[in-house]
Image (cartoon, rainbow, N blue to C red; front, side):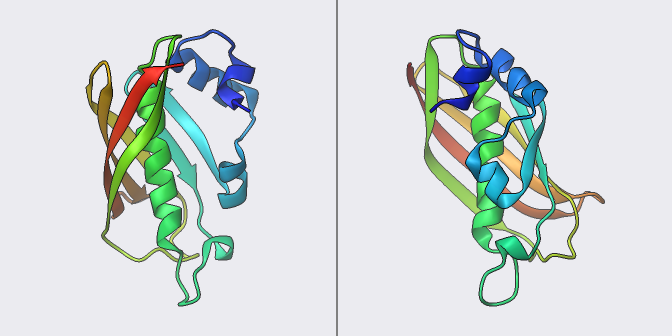
Length: 149
């Protein structure tokens, strides 16, 4: 099932992302980890979520996968905004750097992704994960494969 195709059949990537936000629908991963796609423009996507105990690991902090998921989503959806009606993408590589521990007391986090370069077959994106005060918690770079739908 492709949620973006359901909300905007035959549209380009930016129109699909805008339609997804407008629909209020969320893919399963966003439901499970309690985060939302909140902003898009060409080459840019922002996700927001408040970490809680639902994302805790056994050592008493938010699992690194929570940050990685938000960063991967931000990078991927930033690239998605640059796709035409005939293109799709998948992540080939994600490199995450963790700058500060995340806990349930961290508050709202925003993952902002942006396209660095976009080619016919490969795209490169980067993202940051910051709190409301602008404090950096994690950052990522991503390589994505672009292909025909």
